[in-house]
Image (cartoon, rainbow over the protein chains, first blue to last red):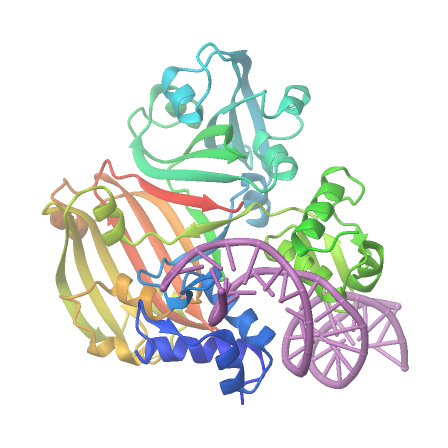
Length: 232
Length: 232
DNA sequence: GAGTGGTCTAGACCACGAC
DNA sequence: TCGTGGTCTAGACCACTCG
């Protein structure tokens, strides 16, 4: 008698782990499981829905429910907001705007954001400070056609990152991370020799099929970027 | 009359975007919203639960539901499984086990995993290959008390990462990323000069409050780690 | 103590899509 | 076509926690 959706979820996981149900196999339908577990179908549905959301099961109407063949390891992740990270580390956050212009982006950026040829974008280069020491150099492009309001935002007041996170929720994106030698401009701003290895993060964010922003950040040596993984 | 949980979710989002409900504000309780929307409380519950899971709302019993103060940009993320990444890039994946032992971990690792003093753990050092070229050096510790079955797994057959992703879903964790100079062992295995800047990733994974595994990976120069952000 | 969210139930209808 | 999952309902009880 399993009468909570968590208990049912755990039992299903146990059967998968014990190979009673193998990847690719169909599992009994909700009604049958409800009988077996002695609970309502809605309770089974809740458990299986969570497992499907986590990528453990695959569900299709009429076809039924199967154990996922290649269980994608999926996790929730908090998008790092530099301001918050710095403050939570007990340090004083600062932000310096180095450049703000509206112009045509380089071809590489335009391609990555899927901008029309000739299109202009808002370009903001800035430095993030912790206790007055620079720790991140940021080069960002924003498509003003997707985010018209951004043109009126005073980046001296609030960083583009913060404004976007607060005002453009529910977006998709891709993130690329590497260790790169510092280019001249980043090296100068961060106060390190050119060619020093830096943590580089590039992120492009989308909303309804259009690119909102593309940002490249380079962090001072010794910086650890931390991600919280939730609900694996 | 809103009678689907998606419609209610969208309406709540609209009110937040329109500043009718501001960050930090409490919103009406489920029963009142059910009356307003002309639907059952369970339907409102479903909508608000999804929004809370996405970080848009914060819910506490008795205290009620509020618009999240600092809307954490949260995103779904696929945990990178090196095998799959390599294959999807059209290259041949290989895996070489360098060391497998059961011993007492160094204090730093034990502390990070919250192991008892004197406790032993499974230690696996391995190399990931793409087209026979090494591209990632991995140093992993696994708590056999949490994952007894791991002791019987043949790491020559399947990498620890893959086995864990398939068999220990639903975990939490934290991930730390930096650019580091290559230590001697990693440098030798990856075939680069000692001190070369490498992308370093550390991940500790938890299940029900106990550490499952701690892994440190160092990637060959030029490697970009990519994360898909879904459902921001 | 009492109000709120968290959950379960039994039943119902519907949409999708495999057959 | 018709079985399956997806969802909604009305009601109920419980757990947590704030005042």
